[in-house]
Image (cartoon, rainbow, N blue to C red; front, side, top):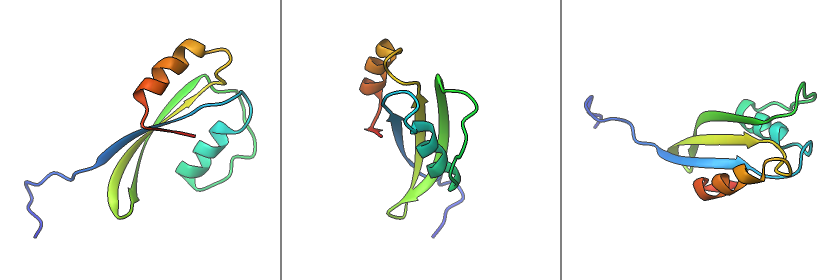
Length: 89
């Protein structure tokens, strides 16, 4: 039975994209979050973060999706990203 004092519980995961510039990392993120394909890109990404709620195997999950620039120019950020993320694309 539902109790009004119970707070909904979420599993939290941090996911990040890693790879060369202009290969489609942002397009994959956009497709996952919006269920639409991104056909044009206005500017290249430096860093964007999104919070997204979904269900995985009927379990509520909060996903933090980090979209970083191509890692050639941002190697120092990559080390921090690898240590803090739960998964990668």
